[in-house]
Length: 278
Image 1 (tube, rainbow, N blue to C red):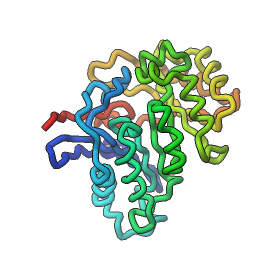
Image 2: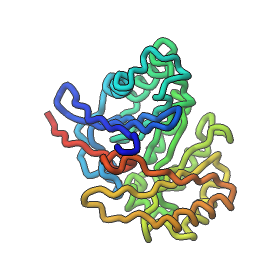
Image 3: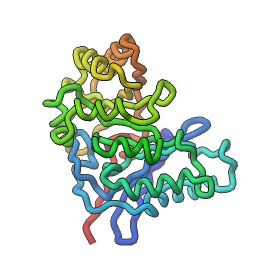
Image 4: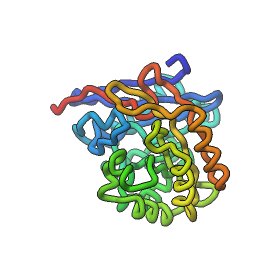
């Protein structure tokens, strides 16, 4: 990308494909890794959701995404403090909690001092809300948790994130309140994509602040990234800024994510590959 973001299209041994993305900052960077070929969740604002699930990735294929990135940037000989690939976000293609065993094995290899030796504090796992598995993330991995929320009412979230029909907002937030290890220094991130005229009204912001009371939380506001065939538009900048301010006024940190990699379809919600069942 013109902004420095890099995307890889990676082929597996059975000729399927997944995408990974690295987003560099001045002195660090985050690698966004995938956990499935395709996805079952069909979130209506996500390009990956238009691709059917082919299969889960193996632990080796998940770790392999970091190996390829490290190879690309020649980082194996550098001490930890000088490595550009400093963080992992499990936010790529697929729902990681529907491939929990392989994801757990992969992240434990990455965190192991005799493996890649990346601290659990530098890893964040994002889920659309597989409620029964959330506690196990905290118990078995202890990594940061991100929740793909995007709506404050079940009726709308059923449309945007269909898994909500199985695990509605009340159940999801109860699991977040009980998440092991959450505190003010280790807050749960609630991801909220800003969709013009859909979920971006001031009333939505007020309701969101009320919903998150009692949770060690911060909100990541994500400007919608367009993809071919998408029926949504991004909320105007002034609307996103107003939404953020309302949350800030209600004692919630609500940074606005700067879109990265849009020109190469590498931004949040844009990942998709052309895989087929072999």
